[in-house]
Amino acid sequence: MSGLSKQGRSASLAAEAPAPTTGEVVEIVEQMIGSIRGDLSPGALQLYGELEELARFIRNTREELATIGADELRDHDIASATDELAAVVGATEDATGKILDSCDVIAEIAAEMPAEQSARATDAVTTIYEACNFQDITGQRITKVVRTLQHIEIKVGQLLGAFGASGAVVAPKADKPKAAASKPAASAATDADLLNGPQLPGNANSQADIDAILASFD
Amino acid sequence: MSVDMNMEILIVDDYRTMLRIIRNLLKQIGFDNVDEATDGSMALKKMREKSYGLVISDWNMEPMTGLQLLKEVRADAKLKSTPFIMVTAESKTENVIAAKQAGVNNYIVKPFNAATLKMKLVAVIGNF
Figure: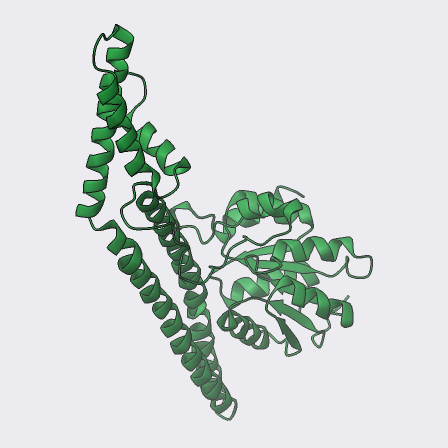
């Protein structure tokens, strides 16, 4: 066996090959296999084995892509998941807007109440406002998931294109998520590297941690 | 020096909900004079038209991020002394360091509450 792994082959094929070439590759490989019968040196014999293995690998991969319905995954499942997540963001935004509208009304009424009740109602309204932070945080988390889905969608498209299963690579359908994609070139790399939030609770610095980092500059 | 409770505060966030939350929490702690922008470039434009006593900005916005806004503000002779608080879900240490190096006055991680907001305002503009 040569040092070339199947993963290595598929990766290089996926990266380099335009959509229709793998069928041609199989054809060329089979023609070569047909043409090198006769006196085979050890080197030629190894090449023969490698080419046969390559042709088998391409055929198997195409069959597997057809079996798992990769085109369906790209065209329907991922697009649908992206739409569902966009609907979640939209629904929470609408609901949060209504909650905050109601808070404003309660705050107005609280202003007309006796002092003690007014203070209690105002505190409760403030707590609701604080809790509505969730809409921003969940929105950003869902945007990160959407971005991952779009990445998978592109990769599946490239795989389908490279192995000729069903047409060309497609661009993602969903809107561009909140990201640093269109930053000026000079600072893009640095700035993009810093856009990773929100972190999951176990991996996040707390406000106290951040205060300590800031204090370390003093 | 006492804090001017009527000073104009510019809040910057691309989430409408968050602008409402910050505006309301500022009102709860006594600041009613609040203006809004939905990204760094809009904020910068407003800052060049009007004087603000404080900027409270999100980080992750398009087309101009909060960090870029902060750098623009610190590089502008007229704006560079404006107090600037970052309010963001970016909690990584390198983010805090980058913001500090760019000249941020304080850094609040989301989600946050009114008490934290007040504490950071006091740290930046003085007791009120």
